Amino acid sequence: MFVKDFGGTFLTTEPYSTPRGTLPGISAFLQWYIPPNPKQTSITFIHGGGGQGAEFVTTSDGRKGWVHVFLAAGYPVFVLDRPGHGRSFWNEEVLGDVTPSPSYEKLLPYFVTPSKGALWPEAVKHTQWPRNEDASHRFMASQGPMASDLVVSQRHMEAISSQLLTFTGRTALVCHSAGGPCAWAMSAIGGDMIAAILAVEPLGYPDYEHSLGRFANGLAPAEFEGKNDPYACPIAIVTGEASWMRDANSKAVTFLRELGKDVEHIRLWERGVFGNGHMMMSESNSDEIAAVMLDWFESISKPDCVF
Image (cartoon, rainbow, N blue to C red):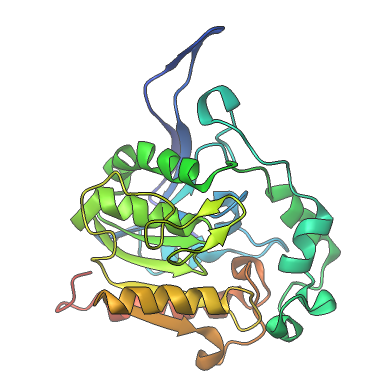
């Protein structure tokens, strides 16, 4: 696919002074892909947990990822490696404590082989992980540690959000899993710069008790540093048929609706897209899911819509 511009840069805060010398501040890596005749609003991908932005570029079995779908539709696309993830290395002296790197035994039953362990009722419906052993190894190779406290992850995102927006311009956020709280935090900082949020199985709902912290502020673990309404823009939450996130996502949607917010719950199985788990951007029908997502973006980008 031809692009007019392709590149990337590190985002970073002021350097940190430590007993052993001066170190780079809270840093992230931002990649961009700009098509010919780009639309005015960009798309920014925000990964979850211990992941990285690369999971939106290429699937674990080597197919074109979601980035290509939105790029082909004319959107400038930005892909973030959040602080301490992907090409932005984890420096504990600056970013704080980190969880251990995840093992196959911990992640595969939730992401790759849910139907075998059936740890939740819908797990038996999981059919879409690629039938390619290398896909599982590549998925595991992409997963690293994360902050040991969800509040810290939120603060990291808030630290680089304003600088991020100077590159993206007005943007719609596509966030996944633990990238969800990061997207709400970015929206609170960005205000009208955030055109929409498409949250793919976002982590959390009010008072949710996670092993890394409680959601004490609605869909986020802590008060937002930004002063704007984080839920003011159009929002869609996407949930897979076989995921353990079904109930949690429903609670998040209920919370937003009770606030009177513009939110759509895209239950994939109700759109004829079946068998998906949590890591749906790497699953065998990822293009079908991208088409559903793109349809939603296009539906709110008509002239009479805010997008």
